[in-house]
Length: 424
Ligand SMILES: *Cc1c(COP(=O)(O)O)cnc(C)c1O
Image (cartoon, rainbow, N blue to C red; front, side, top):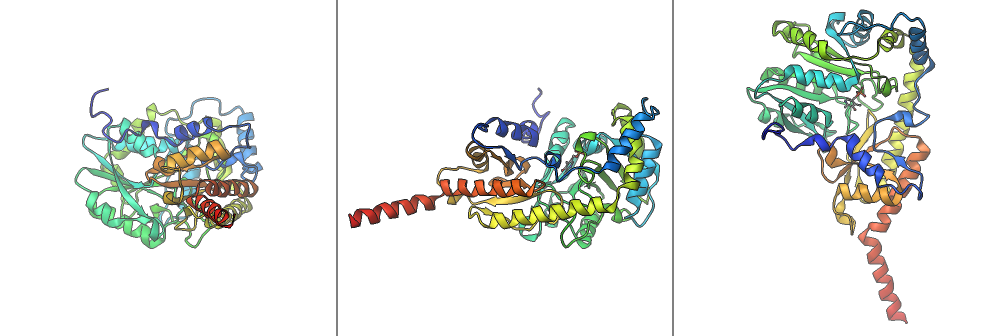
């Protein structure tokens, strides 16, 4: 490959799936049952199962035999309409079907967003810690990535000063993930407004990754970035994956939330429409089921999921406090994972987060994601979308692992030996 083609810290081998695969391979399966708190796929646990309406909707569209053909490249009209209506409920203006494009999960929506914004010398601002797919897509499209920090002591809010300092005339967009992965934060209305205003000041647009939309169970309610669409044009990304617990169905969307029509004037819409000619979206019968899924899913399904996530995140927070080498600066308020700080100096034979996760996998069959994968060395990401009993057991094993590797234990032993020597 030509030098400069991948002009960044080559993220190609540090994807979440890549590193989790390597961690899994180092587990000794004969020892203990593997507990993975590494991946954001909650369907591995029976308390995170989708509901029967969602299933029936797909069965119905499949059996109708009406949806065996191609859909329009931008998605079925009825599906785009249904998503426009669903998202408009929380907005001060109404979205139309033309604002909505159907994608293969939120992952493809990210890929499309970066691809249509790519141009020579362009750069995009992304959060650190963040979601590695953005880096990976940008590398393939030759778009420069610039990281702004999320502040752990301020509820993982965006470091707005850093955004100001990083932006230049080649900056095209800022990525905001809310509710947040990997931090489990939910931003307030006021903070989102400040982000919108800073983007407006610099004339850049906002890519709002709302794949965890509505999965908020703490103080702050979920506010979609599109609420500020009249301040700044927003590209909203989402999917059925997380809220409906069907990540394998690959049904996502890219939506232009732009009441002032800036995207239309700048030909962004033309680029989008063309780009979709090369995107194979999700299966037509899954698209066709979306309207019923969005309209008929009962509130009790959502409240049950939120209740479980609140319970498991509280459990996680409590258990972390019992383990001296782990610190959680902010109680999770949404999404499915939390960032936890590692105090390496308390451990005698662990060099960093990667070493911690590999030894933990090998010795205790517990999988956590090394923070470096999402941009923060000596942190770990812990997924709390898991069965409470599995979480309890995982933390008991982590505690045991800490005790085995802590200096303190060695110290106590020395003291004991010392005392024994004196008294003998
Ligand atoms: C899971 C996730 C995605 C990808 O969603 P899919 O619909 O499964 O493709 C995108 N962004 C973030 C922040 C995620 O956590």
